[in-house]
Length: 177
Image (cartoon, rainbow, N blue to C red; front, side):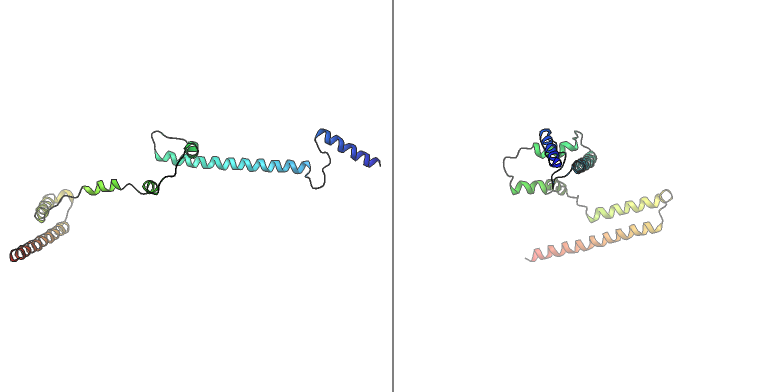
């Protein structure tokens, strides 16, 4: 009976102090609670450290971009939260943002290389051959280099001959028609 009275007194005191001295069945004791809290705190600290590492990696990448008006990794990550979106963007706008800028390619393609005739090429080959023959000592060019350029000149002469034959043939056909 004294044992029951003592348990009842302890239970009443613990209820008054809102502290349970004797854990009820199925409830963790204080050591388990402390361990669980320490484990949760440790997990939270690890998550925060991982987040900081990722922010550092993002900051390194941002710094590599070399912007004059740079921004922090936190600003980069939180940018979407600060951006107010009220409407959906169209498929065209998405494609326009994702696809490379074709205008730059068109500008590059608009400047075609100048047309160089066979006669000009042959003239330039003659000048290069003459130059190499005169500067043989300075550049250390040998006969093989000059022979190679002469071979290229011969190829240009052949192409000029074939193109003049084709022009004559085209003119002949046009006269008959």
